[in-house]
Length: 500
Image (cartoon, rainbow, N blue to C red; front, side, top):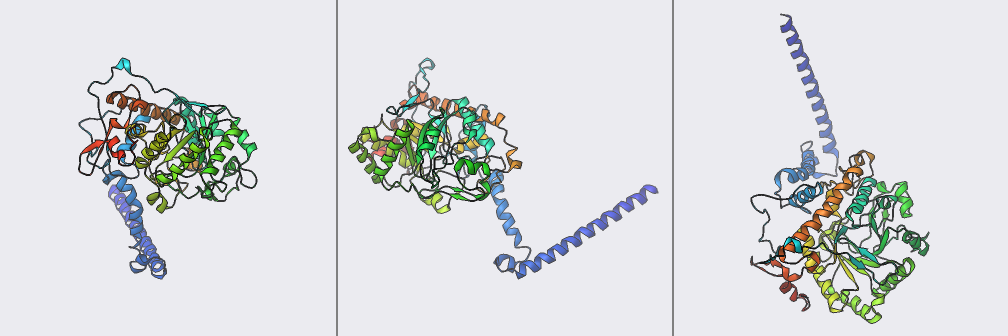
């Protein structure tokens, strides 16, 4: 009897709680109904009060559901699940073998197919990729050990633990780390990695009180033994013709001090170097920085039209190889960044698949292959990408987003909101806590090692002993008729030296 009374009491309380919650929901719905009817900024909510709010909710959640439930392995952009999973597996040190068959659609136009040799070299004939000298005529040339390195990502755009993990991982893997345009932080240096200092249009870290290039600060940066080269950033793939954007919420006191800017104020770089009006000015700047620092100097750019770069190479030919840049980094129009206008990210700049061979051909045409090193950048994260770039003419490949994936990036697309859930692109301590540099640096190094190992495997398969011996005839590209043709034939359409 007592148990029945207790059960009845529980049911009575539950019924009252249900009625209370229902009443509260009705009150909230009524308030929202009035608010939606009276507001004038959203036509859907005004015409469909309360219910219209679900449209925005479903739009936001749609991004999540597409990524995890509906998109196939090869469908997502900018990077699909298959690409990300390969990096995750490589960074974890696990085997990346697959079963049953490839999920890649080999009929997509432009798909590279590497030409296997009938009689590849035996294992005893394999060779690791040799180091390569950059800037042989500089006072302090740089002997770069690896074909695969970390592209420019600024402290500020990246969090402290992300930079710390990348620095330690780069040192472990024997690769270089580009600072990005945000200056040199203690966290870049603490891991012991080789550093490429990038000079952006705002001259962060090497600017005087007026925002101009300071020779004294250049010497101060160059005095660090870890700083091996300087890269002048003309443009990057995601926003050619537009300067860097660092939202105010990311400009902490620490970042402001490193960059030489005001705390808590959005930092927007000029869209180009104000003292560089033409290629003659660019070569003057390259020579000046090289003379001040004693270290190799190059520049990073996005190709708009090959005719413009031909002017550069003709100028170098006229002035002599001593005035040439030590390296050129080519970023494809498909390159990424934390924040950029959509029209620039989507529509401006030649893709790396077209730009790289064109620049390589110009370098060969003017006899500068041994003087100017070519670095490829722009959405190159998997072994096939890196192998293709080497075949196309690159001496090195750099990646930013590949290394972000190795840190645990889940492509949440929140880089510009300071709410990155993996702690990579945020300065919120709550999210940064999830990224532990003491563990993540191992994944950075493992990813770099895996890339090099797999690219060497491709090289051996096509019949050469190491990756830099690969040439364009080792690759076939799928055409619109579904058939593949040798890569050197494709680029012969543009330049008769393309097969060199």
